Length: 233
Image 1: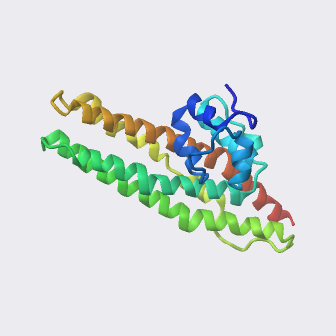
Image 2: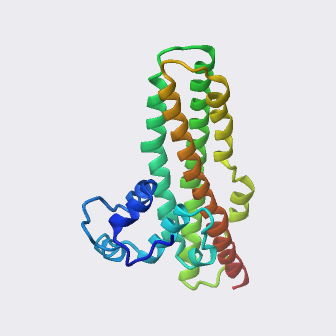
Image 3: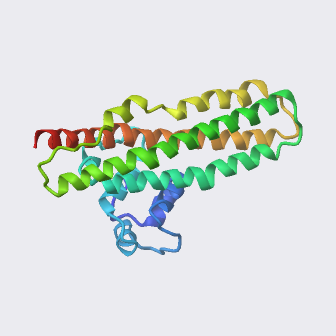
């Protein structure tokens, strides 16, 4: 079912409660009554067309309007991607870490799980740090350059192809982490905790997949076209 601007925002959440963290990244808070998606976006100064493309892409894995998303500005796309990073760093990773730390029995496999997650967290945060401090500032800068209509070619030695070549799919590495729980942790009185951790890891994996899909199929091609325009100007 396609989410439209005339739907009530409350109905969007009833349709798929997993959209809650996505909606929250647009700084839209609960308590919007019977207002439509368009009305809520207007009140919160959110681009309703961009909002709809994002929530529909997240809601339906077969819906991905690559060309539509590429029509939006680099700065708007990056702003959303940065909100994703904030969600990973301040919410879901600390939540999973706290749940893992709540496991009382320190068997060899549980110690392996804790160590593996700690290594994964470091790798994820390093990945985010590189994007926040190198990639995003670069793409914002060249967007400003093309908007200024300057004919001088961009002199920055960095390019989006470097990012594309280095871009590692960190969500893929969650597979081993999930397998530790699925295959090697025995049933115990803490089985419900294992299930909770596993559910959260699957949720994180899907979110990271959607995040990477926007970077690889929207941001990278869009920035690559800007670079070409600067080079040919």
